[in-house]
Image 1 (cartoon, rainbow over the protein chains, first blue to last red):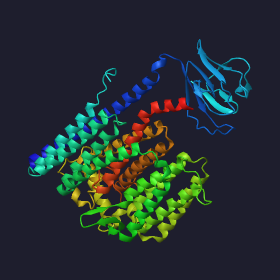
Image 2 (cartoon, chains in turn yellow, green):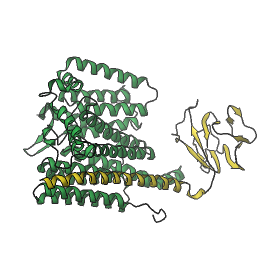
Image 3 (tube, rainbow over the protein chains, first blue to last red):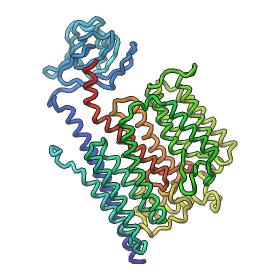
Image 4 (cartoon, each protein chain N blue to C red):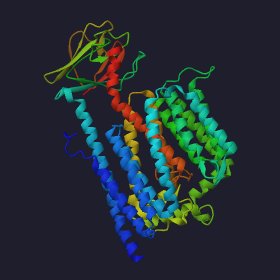
Length: 148
Length: 419
């Protein structure tokens, strides 16, 4: 029995080691998996500049469930039409509403002649403007935060 | 896969096999070379390798939850064999049934598309189970929560009701059920059904399940409901009910007084919790080694108090490892819940995750005297047929949700073209 309890005591350290190695390897796999997925997402837009629009509380109600975040790679047209990069099928959004693109280190926004208009920080947009992070963009009353 | 050097899906599996070989080898020596131990070990390994291979080859979604659950089961079975070899043999049978249930739940949940419309059946099914328990139930350790069929087979309906209740709540919170019944909006029906179930559980004196159900409800309200008024009203009502229960129900008074001071009545009400504390204290950092401790002094060590046995024989590090594994499982499940696009799947996955997390919190907290003790099983580790099978079934549902989310990308693109 003394041999057994000696063996068991030794093995208790081995068990602890194995369990923690197991946890470590699972964490490592999860980390690699997350990294791999984010690499796949950007696959076809390698080295593209990346920004995002995040919906925030608006005055207007949408029937359509908005995503938590809309990603923009280099260039995106937002509108109701199916050909847009970001489709928001709501009546108060024009079919091609607004164009956001990246050029020489700056993000630009241009209204494409929408009926209800676009405002950035509550100023109506008539000409292309440069966007800053945390700007609030409103498309016909639907508000987004622009984030890098 | 070759593009990502260093991603080795085999390593956790190999470590798990190593753990099994060492653990069951040691038990083989400890039990006078009883061959049954080897069969149990081989059975566990077989089930694990089969499940893991099928998951990887058939791309059944998430690859990390099942190995972690298998690690928990391995630790549980090793300790159960050490406590009493009969428990180990029965547990391995339940694990076998659980594996089958896992794949069944996966296939059914993956292929059947109308889960979000069946709120009525979930509510009726759960109520029927409760009524059956109240009428035909058998009282074990002061809680009337067992249904017995014949002389061999008994099961705990409350484990199954938890799943039905989550699916019911998900119908409401995912907004797939929005038309009122009569003139009562679904919000108040779900509220009423929650309190009805809690009432049934009070009659059964199953306090642990009440805590789990109510916390699922509160967490779902917190995540889904706009504004905090309804949530705060609920929590207020619950605390008033809890205080009233403490004033008038003897059972709850005993639990709270045992929690505050188990030492004053150490031979009677405080016996279980003090033995558990002695066991945890004697384990130290690395434990006394499997077979060196004396977990059999703790009543109910094989089901509710298995965590104390883990702490005694595998040390604080072993106990912490169990908590870390549950953390990681909860993290992966929340991740799946965030990633999936179907609102109903999101709600179900979230509810099941909260169920696992709360169950772990309640029983680990109870055993270590952090919160008042309520009897509930530690998922995957404790001995218990229904608990193992239902945990496997929930795992199957989560796996199906993650598989849907991973494969659903093409469907969604097709969807967009049709509009």
